[in-house]
Image (cartoon, rainbow, N blue to C red; front, side, top):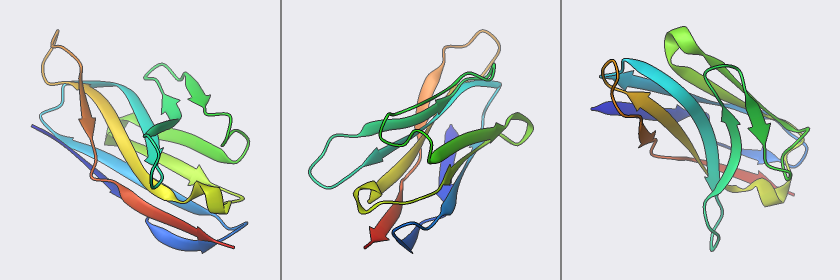
Length: 121
């Protein structure tokens, strides 16, 4: 069993900043991708940022230049620094971690419970 826990929810004014954290724990041999998604009311879940184990990073066009993803592999932790927040950034933000539980094992996507980010104008 792999547990994924996000933290950093908050109510923030437009133009403000916050940092989300996500920690994976449990039966983990190795981790590849650590990603951030978000889901706004009435919309599908959207990939916001992804970080590969080799340092590959990508962002959705809607957040490029404002959001920064980073990770600490030793701590099985990924962060999302969010700057210049807009009301349309309001959503539940989810962390997803692709982990293998043993050497040579299949990578399994593990999801966090989500954390609410609300941006006021």
